[in-house]
Image (cartoon, rainbow, N blue to C red; front, side, top):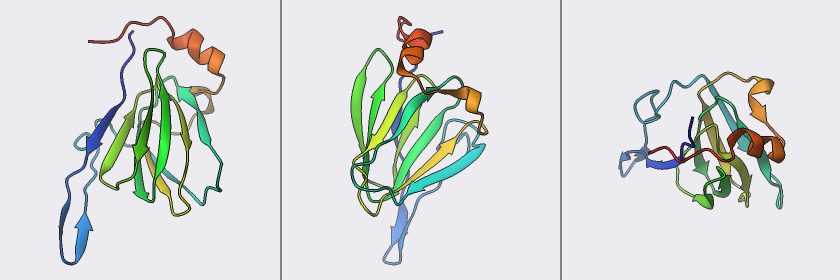
Length: 140
């Protein structure tokens, strides 16, 4: 098992003077079956969310309104990603420790998940995360 790296996808945009539309389909624009959908909104200034990784779940994060930043750590790379467009999708792999922050007041962060909710799938302790995923080689 190796580290799989998150990726940014751009959704196609259809539109005219009436407005815009982007399409999301399982195993098409999103590279997995979508089994759960939730969204984060009304986040107060200065609040951060996330602080976990997963054993199995892949996720697609889309800021459908406003913007936020996502800190990613897969033990090989650490980076911040800005989500500021409804056609920009951040694909998170299970081995991505992620923290969302700097939410704008109007931010609505849509999350599409590959698995149904299972509390045992979450790695909420950073040291446990390192024990599970540290020292794995980058997949080619």
